[in-house]
Image 1 (spheres, rainbow, N blue to C red):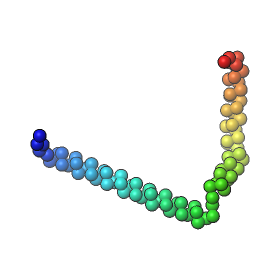
Image 2: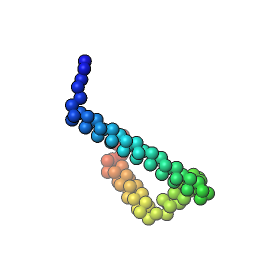
Image 3: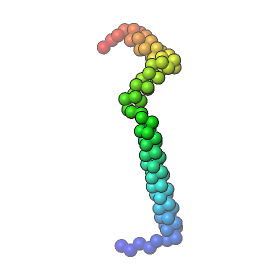
Image 4: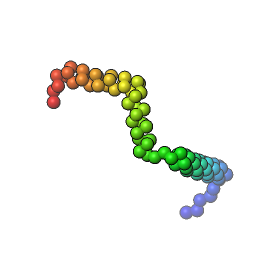
Length: 87
């Protein structure tokens, strides 16, 4: 089955190749950027354990998180009592 390519098909094929090339370039740029961030992070003496501890400390002391937690807990309690605690 022979197929002849019209000029329109060649243009579309060229556009698809350009788009694929752009996605490839973006991927390569993201990998390079990730490597740079990782090397910067490691050069500061940081560790995953320190990051976890800092995150936990920041979340616990954040007033917005505390307020949201209180609201969620009170909503859960009121919902449990208003539904009659049916299981």
